[in-house]
Length: 248
Image (cartoon, rainbow, N blue to C red):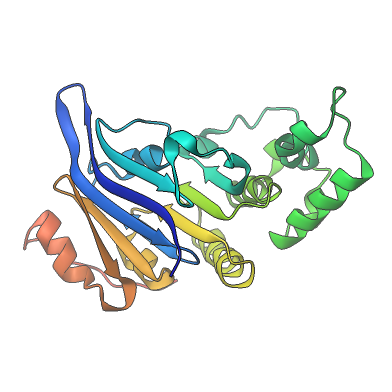
């Protein structure tokens, strides 16, 4: 299997507080990897380290066989951050304009949306099932609909890997189910490697093929099919915690 993301012996601390120590992670091409862990366990920190938004005090990170310092193909990397949930709904932009924002380098000096750009916009909106909303203001859409628009904006640059930092917080169950169907399409049909931080251990382990557990300053990777949710919950939160099983 081809390795597309690799962290080797990374350590990171905020001021004098260590959150990762000599941690390792390998992501293979075609993976849908979930990243789980208790609050404050460095899940989001790990994502930011892999993207170069933070720099480890120790260790090396590689994207597509290139060290992070030498990696230049950022168009092939998508990132949906937690900031999407705090998007300003009064922002006066249409869905088409939001998606087109990732094409600005191709638009030339005057930033006109040309016919070739509209074709790409229509293509990614069709993938996420939002074609009919192209002329709508982004602020008029529901949280789940906005989420799909930001995924479309990420897709327009043809990424090979998409990182997501808790994209389902505040999203209703129907939108969550629609989201996972879309992720399956991106992963299985388009071959995009997905790496997603989630707080919902029960659901993410059912939807992914591998799960990385962040805790005790380490990263432990498991096959989702053999991952024991109850044992993990008890190891993190103690024996008094009871796991509630549910399906959407």
